[in-house]
Image (tube, rainbow, N blue to C red; front, side, top):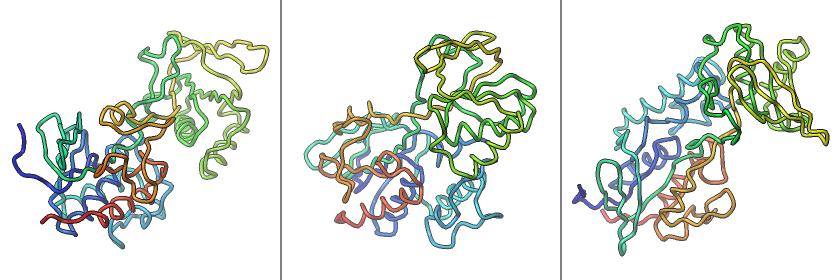
Length: 318
């Protein structure tokens, strides 16, 4: 069904960038709608339970002084509650569980096709984030039920033999959580040393390694995943293989943005990034903008500024 009303703006995604854009649009008196495929701040919902964020509350808030939490850094649960309550209290126009499947431009108007309707608008801001697709290894056995690309909580894995794959903060956090339930933890990383993790994760992780609670296998890659084991291969010239007994595997190897969707709606892709003006955030399609983690700026505190900067450029037709 095509909505008869012509909106000034459609915002795709209700993450922090999308909420920032919606709040700025509301304050400027724009007619707008936010279309979200899942929940408000869906990416934060996918964080491990009780995870503590690196950012401080003032770096995450949509309005100064509006985010209060118990400690210096908010938890996953506090962050979800803040954004959800902010959206409700400010009556932001958000439709959750309504995924956008296509965007086309007809003259001066965009047609935004969602699972439930077709919307007409003058401008579009795409804020879909980068966590759409888990980055796969492409090895035999990756689809076994013992393999996961997400980590939620450690309790189900008490005393189990676990392999964590990856060398970023998510991988180290996963390994540390599993140590707390006395799992037998190994970590495979393709590089010779850690370069990306924050000290808040790296220091306690190295303490567990020195204490024999975590086994680190540098310069290794997963070659094959079996029901009761996993085959790792050394990246050295010898290419020696090693088989580890294993109950569960967490592939904390990152995610890929939905580049296929961006390409399908006409946005040029260069390498792993969409092409856009880094000053205005406008793509080469006039009136179509990108904001948030889908751009090259990957921190929430930066993403929150994108929407207001875009809204400032747009003339109102009200």
